Length: 289
Length: 204
Image (cartoon, rainbow over all chains, first blue to last red; front, side):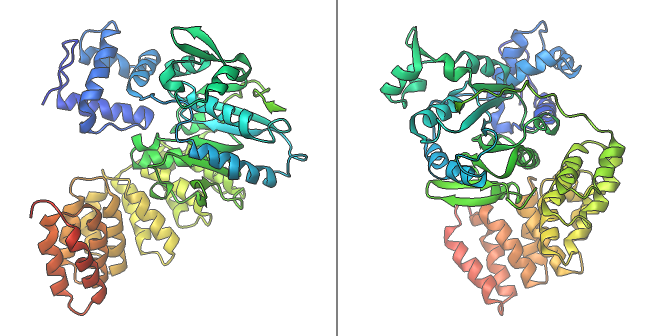
């Protein structure tokens, strides 16, 4: 079976297999034949936006290690739809149980040294890290007494640009209380609202692949990591590697949130599951240096 | 106090160490340095013998898991064979960790199956069923069916049944029912099958 691409470049099954193997090796993201239509459409977009007119010539150039082409491809093939306060029972867990535990482990409000560090990965267009910021500012009693660093990271450079601009439509903001919108957002026209500069400037954004151990070495000593709904895109081996890298990015005792349909127990045994009132969270063992 | 932007400049990626140094670090007293070294040896064939040697020696489970993650990425028959010897280990943590690693190696595990399925130690065959439970290979279910139909040890057959059940359908009823008849004195096996049969759906 050959998949038709609108650029006129038909993708054979062998092409598809070669492409998915290449993309897997570069990113850890695996596309099964069931994703054929999705992949075909996005490859077609990439070919149309390039100076090549066939899959063969485009793929040959890609394999010559053209980083701009690879980034464009990654941007096309990663799914980025999200919204503010998504799966917010996990933010409840962060506020109600995880941060109190982190504070206690680090000496308490008055003795903590250095900021509490929170990583949102993948952060997509910024809804998750800004949601964390809003929940902390509005609902965490210690926010005026403790420094908190929020970092967002994603493999897709386009969504990071959007996260930095932080302008959102009503669909993205539908779960945000009106009072919060009035307090922390500025209308920028066409039904869109931009996160205020004070919050935008407090969130540090990074381009990064969670499967890349060398890139992930820059991330250390995080107290909390949200890594939701991304491991489901990886095969078993890439998930294991991502888990190892997330482990290395956490402090001993640090907490990892996965998506509601994801389970670390199916991926790696190196984390300790902790059952909180709000659900399961995974912890880097405190005894592990 | 409050939300603060990271004050320090964007950190440089830590220095990339050469293979010899990374291999030396596999012996470092600090388990975190050993763990990081093992991960950074990814994709370096020259490091495979050293990593394989560490599998049975490493005492920290998190370091051993990192070693196994790096080795599994090679997915070669030599690496799979080097790992499979530990399926016979007396240490439960080691043999389970190795089984989980082998389950991520669909390219190389099939070549080992004839010897694993014929291993004289039935515990190795039990662990092989665990590998097949998670192996992303189109023939995994067929191999489990073969174990259920042919293996002479009830523990192996029960392990294979456990491995098959999450993906089983009505077509597997005959082989499951035959297993009960082959081991009439094994109540656990019979209970497992009888509990599962009503849930099997699909074409018989």
